Structures are given as C-alpha cells and as structure tokens.
Amino acid sequence: RRYALRVTERTLVLVKPDGVERKLVGEVISRIERKGLDIVAMDLRTVERDLAAQHYAEHDGKPFFSSLLEFITSGPVLAAVVEGPRAIAAWRQVAGGTDPVEKATPGSIRGDLALETGSNLVHGSDSPESADREIKLWFPSL
Ligand code: RTP
Ligand code: MG
Image (tube, rainbow, N blue to C red; front, side, top):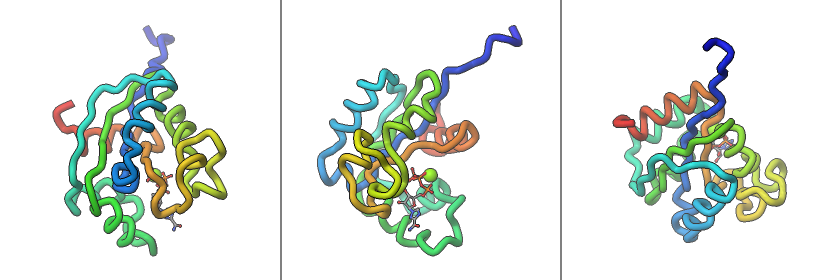
C-alpha cells in the first residue's frame, strides 16, 4: 500500500584500521547491538586502493583525499551491513560527528574514544543513496 512507508534502512558500517588496531571491534559491535540495530553481514578485510577510492569518491580532489586513502588502506577494516528503523541516522548518531572533539558528543563512539578527524574509528553511510552505493560496493552479493 502506498501509505506503508518503508522505515527499515540498511547502512554500511566500517571499523577503520585505527579501530581494529586498537582492538575496538568488540566495542563497536556492542554499540550496534545495544542501539538495537541488526547486523546483516560482516567481514574483516584489507582494503584495496581501488575500493577505497570508490568508497570515498565524493572526496576525490579534496586536500585530505590522498591521506584518507593511505589511512583506510593501512590495515584491516571490519565492514558490516547494519539494518533497522532509520538505521542511517541512528548509526551516525552512535558514531558521532566527523571531528571527534569539535563535533562528536560524549557518549558517541568518536566522542568517547577518538581524538583526531583523520583517525575517527568508524564510518557510516550518510544518506540512503550513499548506503545503497556503498553496500553494493562492499557486499555485491547482498
Ligand atoms: P566517514 O565518511 O569516514 O564515515 O566520515 P564522515 O561522513 O563523518 O566524514 P566525511 O565528510 O565523509 O569525510 C570522510 C573522512 O575524511 C576525513 N576528513 N578529513 N581534514 C579534514 O577536513 C577532513 N574532513 C574529512 C575524516 O577522516 C572523515 O571521516
Ligand atoms: Mg562520510
């Protein structure tokens, strides 16, 4: 029916190399679960430069683009597809703002556990369009 709005969303979550290195994978999974979101798929992998560049294509040409690719390919990341009502905004709230000090609030992952914008522990898709694109990129079989 037309009025049956689909509120269930999927989002792509990454635990970036700094989070894996610091052994915060369990902490991040715990926060996904405590928020009430469902984990649909999960994979620990090293990111090829090509995937990194496609993932962050919107930032191509910006001054921090090359260091961003350098960072995200520097070690294994945990990639997950996370699902739930308003999952995209819900996960961005749990993750916290991009700058862990100026934007992320206490209680968020970045606000509690990160210090620098360039190593802010986690990723979350920023819109339904980004989520669709990123999930196809990271989990083509889903
Ligand atoms: P992400 O995509 O990684 O989840 O982070 P985000 O949405 O919060 O931030 P976004 O604007 O998409 O930027 C992607 C990543 O690039 C780095 N960045 N550095 N120096 C800077 O001004 C700057 N701006 C962004 C951050 O590591 C950010 O997470
Ligand atoms: Mg982003």
